[in-house]
Length: 216
Image (cartoon, rainbow, N blue to C red; front, top):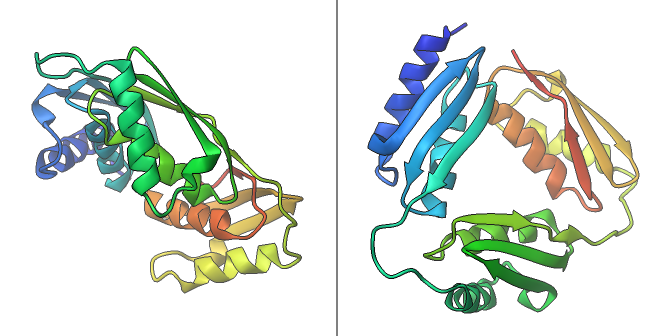
């Protein structure tokens, strides 16, 4: 198992390696496998990329993300302009049912509300909004529509995990209660945990997930 200092070194190296991240303004601290990011980035999208970079590093148990968005000293984009750009980009995104989503912007902080059928649509809306210049944070309050849950939802999730070359389905447990799915068990890396989550969200009828998978 990696020591905290080894994990810190690997996270810093991963941030430096990613060309989309200006790593020089980001601080990295590690305690008990929990990585804390502090400092500044130049956009909300870069903030998300830094978080993804940490997730890629083996040994990461959790992330405490304290990064702040600091834009270059140009004219500040107004909330009205930010809102308009987000509405436009949502309308252009084929994955997003833009007619079901409302956008509110206050001092650069975006709140998304509405209802969609699938989790990937909720995530697509968040990613689209995060690409807009001037956005400093996003509160994604979009809810998932309640739909009939397939009787074989557990089998679908386990089959999806089994299809992955990097995940061991035998080490993951799945419990269902209506549209709620509870994941448990142990996996070897953060990527395997993410595979299990994606498989669960892809199953028809899933409205919430409780991920109790432990990274060994």
